[in-house]
Amino acid sequence: MHKIVLAVTGASGALYAKRLMDKLLTVRDQWQELAVIMTTNAQMVWQTELGDETYKDYPFSFHSTMDFMAPFASGSGRFQTMIIAPCSMGTLGRIATGVSNDLITRAADVILKERRKLICVVRDTPYNLIHIRNMETVTLAGGIICPATPSFYSKPTTLEAVADTVVDRVLDLAGLQLKTYRWGETEDQE
Image (cartoon, rainbow, N blue to C red; front, side, top):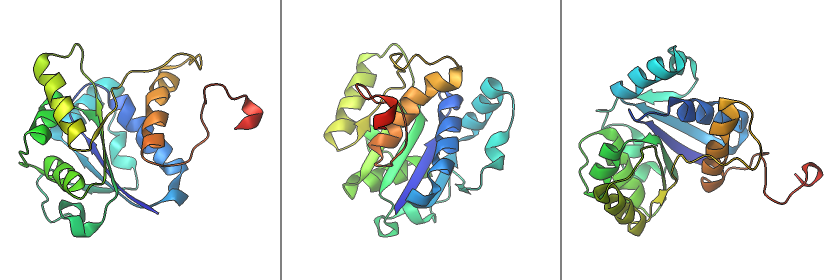
């Protein structure tokens, strides 16, 4: 059973966070604990992009960005996976340089030092050289950079389906089992 931290930062892409939360509910039998950290900017972006505050309706354990007493602020909390979606370049930069000035960056530091799975869903374009070097640093430290770059071979027809091409990949990277489009498979193979 997975123990997962989901961090949502203020980068554009609230739909990715929403679809992750929705899909995590559908695989509830695969995780033991799910903790969520949302920055104030993430809440504002959610309201701007999605037009509501439905993030308040999810039955997850929400933590303040300054709650350093959260169980995943220490390796002894034994959270195996952290997903940051969307991951702002500012957050990525602080992780890459070891600046643990809030719960998101502290939890990422813990995940990396414990050699567990950190998945950063970066959502910015284009990248400058600082972004690229920060992605390289996090990758060399054991993190996974999963850009919020949708695929189209499944022929998605809604914004949610487009976002799901990224979200499903993130959940695969996290080690969760879900039914999704698989390249080269027919529906009866799924």
